[in-house]
Image (cartoon, rainbow, N blue to C red):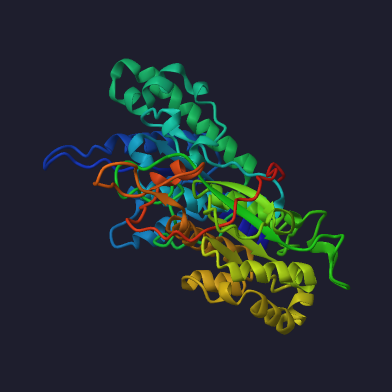
Length: 453
């Protein structure tokens, strides 16, 4: 009886969350410019109700105008984003400049990633709609990677967007067709992907999927580079007696949160940082880590994911201790542990002491989030919550330590500029300090094949 009641409640979840950028009013007494978005929302809701068996009174969709006066704004948004079936971002240049829209995107995309991690089945439940056409080169990485055929909604829709169709009566038929097709796609995706509810994300603390705001000038849309490195044993060099179910043929195959999670953590981390508008490379600490070269500066920030059981190997422990002594602050360390792994829990004292002896610098370095991540992350949900903070900390440290060169000639010098293969990616997305440290760094490890899933 209880399962049946829960199933009926799940069936009444909103089919879609309409995410859009508010257009500012141009003076007092001017009609609300977002009235056209509200009309689109009402039309979509009407079609979705007709195409489904939602009962009367159930919400077909949600937009932020649905929030009642006196209701907690961020709490209500977080609640709906944690249960809605499909996320519908309304593309426009203003949309990708909006930090709030980026937060909404990230909150839903994290649910997709967790669904994939736990079921080992990809979930693509973001259905974009064109409000105003956006050139492909202006799309941030998360939007650019969506595989979506907008032409199925009509050629005029692609060239003018829903705003052009809804504003001009001559295109009324094209508007009706586009909205009908969009509603059909929403219902189809909702029924086939079945992304389950999750715990609401703290909307105020959520990062933007479009990257941090640019301090000077427009936000850069291209993804920023980062490396995800794994230090873990494989099935072929496990410590004596260690349970093999968490490991594979490569260090990158390590899955500490099994059986709750069915994908290696490196690939979950890759998907999460992609949602933060990064382009991630996956590497192995054993094979791709090199000693610090005093003549070279860092070329990208890095996330080092460490299995404490890896410290049982003398050679690997010495390599990690040498890494810690090099003091690379642009590398954020995360140490996952599974609180349901009885073997690890039983060896907690020994493993924790060995970690403290091997990585004393990293355990005490950086912000509170970075120190907490290095001391232990007990679940996949906690990993997803802390990852944006440690990634951004690594990115900021990268900017402080990347090599800078003053421009040649003349007595007047401009701000130092980063140089190198990754400089352009960061120069327009981060606030590069006027004074940069010149701490040297190791050459970047070779890119590994990150096509596994």
